[in-house]
Amino acid sequence: MRGISIKYNEDYTKCQVVVSVTTNGKRTRYKQTFYVENEKNTKAERIMELENKAIEFRNKHKKEDFMRGEITTFEEFVDIFMKKYAKKELSPSTVERYKQLYSRAIKSPLGKMYLSDIKPIDLIKFYESLEEKQVIKYKSGKVKEYYLSRQTILHHQKAIGVLFSKAKYWQYVKENITQRVENIKVKHKETEVLSLKEIKKMLELLENEDIIYKTIIYIAVLCGCRRGEICSLRWDDINFETKTLTVRRNVLYIPKVGIVEKTPKTETSIRTLTMPDKLISILKEYKVWQDKERLKYGYKNTGKLFTNWTGEDKNILIPDTVSNWFSAFISRNGFKQVHFHSLRHANISILVAKGIDPKVIGKRAGHSSFDITLEIYAREEEEQDIIAAKKLDEALA
Image (cartoon, rainbow, N blue to C red):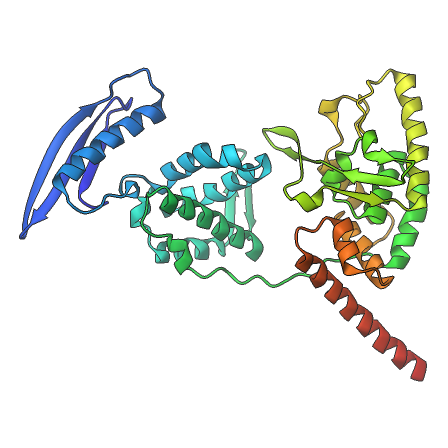
């Protein structure tokens, strides 16, 4: 911190400010104690009031522009950023993710540094520390060691970039120093996808599985919906007359928050898809089963497609439950390990192989950008080209 020192008392009702000014090589120190006007204000309000008085006092004695980042630590600004911006403007899942990412930075030397004192090299050192072995020590004495993926480290960089961008906009710092640090390079990892033959085998095996999960898997394969979109479906999203399914919501589960249902983050994610006849048949079968179960056990009719056994809104089937079931299903049936999201990619792959227009594929998938569709389309065409070459080899062998 340059030229100013602030010391608070325990309850932040007063502070002592010391301003140092050097003129012609001679250093002069000015001191003054400030008190809050209302001790009943919140801690954050008391700190803000005292800071403003300290800044005003400082500006009386120093001519250069003052940035609030000179008296605000990284940890303190994270708290301000979360309260003033993140919790008001961002989705609950993004807020929770930012908390996780910022917590590592707060525990590092960055946490206690003043924003204005943080240099690009300090960020580089922090990112380098993330590449080292991470250790968690539990109260039970158990120790967990692991390494963060390069993708996760990149997420830290982007989150801190957002933080400093807002710090500059709010005039806490003069420059967004994250722009002077290159992002870590992350290699594109191809999504493991079941082949068409494996998909057909999987659908056959579903005939012996729980009808709830059978229906969910069919929606994923035949409509390419995301798991959160499927879990949030209601019967009024299904139109048997027009043979359409409309995606209007997304649901997720956030630890310490609970189930959060919201509209998709992009307009293109809200979409209406024409359903294949096979899916219509599956859904009608499922509707008959669900109605019988509700009448048999007296469950509440929530209008939702998928809830747990109580049928209550608060007990909606959550995405992680679906993923866990799917993982167990493919394991016990000898399939290669793939994520539930791979069913969405499988849907796109099938449409590409059948020569469907990329624009139609992108619209059905709810891609936010046509570039995303083209990238997937190009990869699938490349794979088809490789298969074609192998077929020629086989034919001429």
